[in-house]
Structures are given as C-alpha cells and as structure tokens.
Length: 160
Image 1: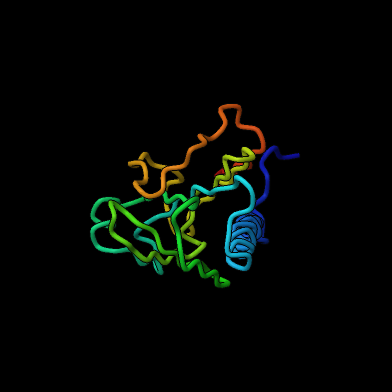
Image 2: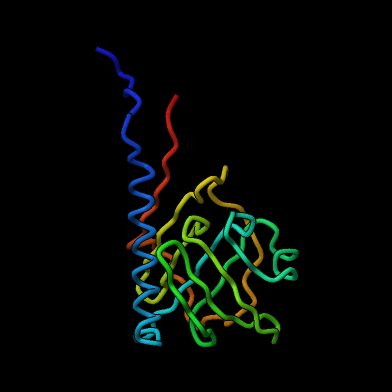
C-alpha cells in the first residue's frame, strides 16, 4: 500500500476556487442591485494588477505594479457586476477612477464587519500573496479582527 495520494483527474482545486469566487460575485451583485452596502458591511478587495482583463488607470498600475487593495465602503459609484468580474468607480487622491477587475484576478476578499475572509490564488498567478502598499481610497473606520475567525483559506498546491 502506498502513502502517496494519486494525482486527481478531476480539477477539484479549480472547481472550489471558482465556487468561492461566485461568493464574491453574489455579494457584489447584491450591493449593485440594492445600490448600497447593508449595515456596517464594507469590503477590502485585493487583486493582481497585471492579470488579463484588469483595467486600471496608468498612475495606479505604476504605483501598484503587482497587487492592489481597494476598499468599498463610503465613496464608490457605478458598481457593475458581470459573470466574470466587476467594474467600480473610486477616488484616489481626489482623482476619480474606473477600475475593471475580473474575478480571476482577485486574491483576497474581506468583510471586516463580520470577520469574513476569502483568500484565492489568482488564476495564472505564481505566488499567493505579496506585501503591497495600502489602498488610498476610502479608508474604512473599522479594522479587520485579529482572531481570524470565519476565515477560509484556499491554498491548493500539489504535492509532487
């Protein structure tokens, strides 16, 4: 009997990642439909800036060449959610900007109001997480919890 797990012919990691990204799409879709965030909910969304389909202004891509975190809380507009991603208007240093982000580029989704967090490996990205500068838009008043409760970490690295 072998201790090695056989390689799966079913791409479970991709299926689970896609299902969890649907959570992000459903939550943002609800905000789009109602036109507001419910209660004190607000979101930190981190994404890879060089992923195919990401469209951000040049000054932001120069400042955040790999990864960027945005905050949806007080000042955002024109949120549009599609099957594969979302578009949102945010202000950075007083300059209004439109960002287009495919769900495949999202690496973190956090709702600090309820200590909820999803972590993803960006489709096609090598590394899961890198340090980056904090977002300058719409700084939230509530910081994420320290205890890590309600955190789902999805890290599918294959053992070879």
